[in-house]
Amino acid sequence: MTSRRAFLAASIAATASPFVAAAQPPTKTWRIGYLGPVSPSAGARLLESFRQGLRELGYAEGQNISIDYRWAEGRPDRFPALAVELIQLKVDVIVTYNNAGVAALQRATRTIPIVFASVGDPVGSGFAASLARPGGNITGFTGLTEEVSPKWVELLREAVPTVFRVAVLTVSRTLAAYPDRRECSDQNCRLWQVIEGAAKAVKAIPQLHAIAGPDEIEHAFANLIKDRAQGLIVLPHAVTNANRVRIASLAAEHRLPGMYPDSEYVEAGGLMSYAPNYSDQHRRAATFVDKILKGAKPADLPIEQPTIFELVVNLKTAKALGLTIPQSVLARADRVID
Image 1: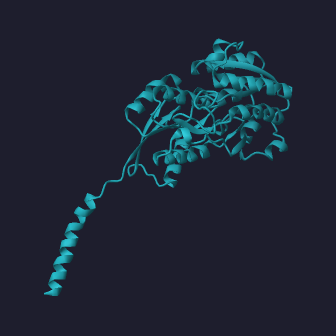
Image 2 (image 1 turned 90 degrees about the horizontal axis):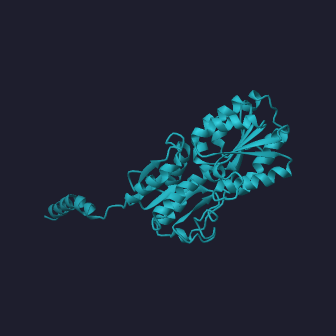
Image 3 (image 1 turned 135 degrees about the vertical axis):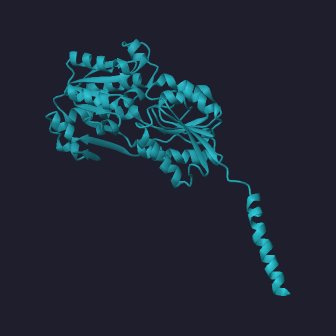
């Protein structure tokens, strides 16, 4: 009789256990919005770094998170509508990595947390009250571009000492409309001012070539060749990044050694880049997302600055341009593309 009772008890427990399990509250699925400034293919490397960071923290798509993606395809005019779309989806947090994208999100919401994997001058751009205490719904990583930009001029001159006239290609509606800089309301306008000062220190002559959009790229190259530019610096922007292959190709066609704001340009055939490791910053942006999903407020999460910088040199491009990069530059390179 005792064994029969034990058998019946075990049977009841086995039958009941699925119902007990079903009664447990389901794991919450957090909803993340991701606003990319370029195309899915152009942004694939950085996106994968962000997803890797999420996986390292125990998040998996389809299990405890879902990610809604929107891509501006290199067209900043699309940001406002895409920002509204993500907000209407009632996401828990939004991740992006572009000043224009952050600005569009800021205009669209003051409540949904926004994490930027990289922007220039977040305080000067009005995204935060200070780096230590952002004070609003936005936090993340700076790109330190204003601090880095003098190195672009110095390294280009050191790598190619024959370069004196340096064309600076920038997407800036302010500079395109006001080349005399009587107004300077965007990041690349401020970068140009920094480069102007840095160029004097290394006896370089900077030449501004500001465009308002991708349709003006070929015209800008025609103008800089007319101005007898000997080298090229490209300032960071979603438009130039989305067209980096085209820009690197035009630089090669006109035999212009170039310094670029991201290693992806160098992988596309550009000569050199000096920049934060943006893949690392995207991976680490996941830690901001994790803290916010666990209850932290963006206002209380200090904005972090880059800790890893990379100098990347494309020796194949140097050879095609007939250049010998000095050993003093190659010794400092973090990566050399043969």
